[in-house]
Image 1: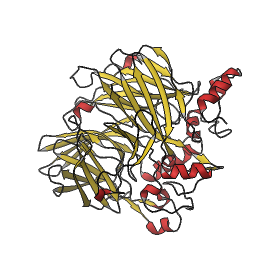
Image 2 (image 1 turned 90 degrees about the vertical axis):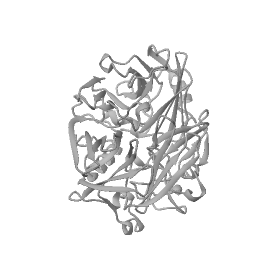
Image 3 (image 1 turned 120 degrees about the vertical axis):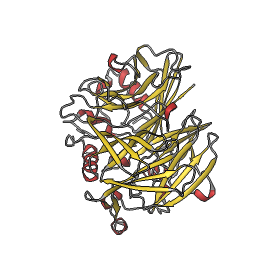
Image 4 (image 1 turned 30 degrees about the vertical axis):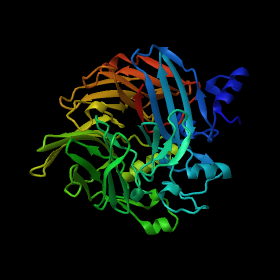
Length: 491
């Protein structure tokens, strides 16, 4: 095989083969579920498309870089990861300028990736796959896959994974620079994949280890302003949080970890326990004084992602997506890695109100199948109206989302668009229109996969007119494994 899929594509086309025949990966993988084909993964190669074909016309004001991260390598030497979260991080960069689009993708050169790439086989245990360690595991960064999200600060691009440190890359070339240490005393402390960035550039983030919760406040200049390690009995897995003007809010699900099982060779997923009769603890931390905390209990709920939050000093309001319980979620994540469609159990959105004076909670639920909520970055931690999601519209047995939805949190009004059953839609982010100040005035930008063409694309929508359909799509000459999260940075 050539060292790059682009070279391979050129050779195939020269020989008269179409992109639809590029069945790279496992023979017969997902034969009965073709929408799962990108989960075959890559083999560690680079992707390059310096001139991407555009359908429609890109808006004149849409200029910048869209960085996106996700699991890209799923198998080595005949052994395949069991869980979607295990794959090594593949960092993508889309460049949009003067109506032109280019794309490149590079694997994050973590310590783990380099060692396994040289050996040609798995050497270290993964989150959901039990693998006997053939190298010393000195801490979380020994198994860091840097595969979940991104953050750009100045000339540093960070590939993020909730279990370990951020990995720093060159944003122009995607070359890996190495592990980021925010301060000496925080060396090796996990830095989660969901930092919240307020309008002034302030970054809030967290990390968990052994039941402790590290909290970070970082300035727009990349310097740590404050940090603390809180002994709050954090669960074995905590993926996201939310911030308002005064508070940091965490939903601590009833997830336990059997460390004896881990030491005996079980994967982290295999050693996790879920207590359906337990409580999810709502932890509210004062941003001005991390020692001021409040815990309120609610029924057990598994939450991966939040949209936003705001407070007026008396009431705290936030939205999130509630997943199916942990055993079902992990079971589905393992099924798709085998190329099998999981049962059609969906994640749905919630709006939570917390009376800070009485401690009472009120939850409003909706039934649309959604995930990966995003808001306009200009309203993070402030009062807001709109949240955007990938959504499933009449997908039948097919896995994944095939449309986009905008919800007015205040009125409940929604707007949707569906690509149809032969498209899988990934997370889309809100890009403000240059010079605009109104919430939602801008474009929704994200990726998708066309099942019949077996090609990935970038789509652009007017964020306030989803039903009209995409303004433009930029079609890659190849497919890319499904990712998790990204951010757009205007030029």
